[in-house]
Length: 318
Image 1: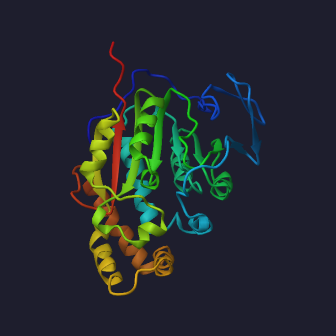
Image 2 (image 1 turned 120 degrees about the horizontal axis):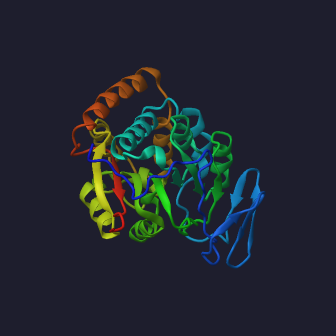
């Protein structure tokens, strides 16, 4: 991968990384006061319920995810080829491209049921916390991760305070209406030299009712994602497709799908079938995607059903 990403400071991450949160009402800094938190600016208090800090202020915005699948994910994420390949690409990308990774703690925006966060935590990555807008997903994540978890409002920027060192946004940006504004916000809360790592679905021509079911607003080209990151102020240090082997399969499935009426019911059946772990097929695809991952260590992939990017807020000038 590309040259390492490093910050402007060399600080060791403590056993419990500092969690920098902002009051969703006034934007002031939050002081953690178990069992909850209180704003140092306006004085509002926020409760903690069953190990999850509630920073909601009233739901807003259209739904970004179908919580129906939260019950399925914990059963398959450790074995299904798609989830296994994605998490390995993310971890390897971080280790190869962030040269002071041991000094950074990741905050996962849109952590869902916590499968990826639990994997990163178990792999030795320092984790500052995670947030999501769905209580069911966070309840499942609470059983799987040790890091702090935060319930946030749908359609609102995550209540992150300034000075973040490493933010993850894994298959979340495509669910957000204002993706440009979201990237600008994440740039603003990262410290100079702070790193953003994200994944998104690739190739707009693949968009169909499966994406509608997943409540995707869009799929991305590699150039589009790079342009939007740079427009938000980021330096793009690594940007590549991955899961190239799935594109021919998806093209065939999309073409076959056009031969029958397009319905969300049909898409749900397809999604349910795609989430099943069929041992022989799953093992074959895991092996092939492992070979692809080795290729990705040295080369960009020109196509693939997903895109991974690592970007940095430029360091402060001396």
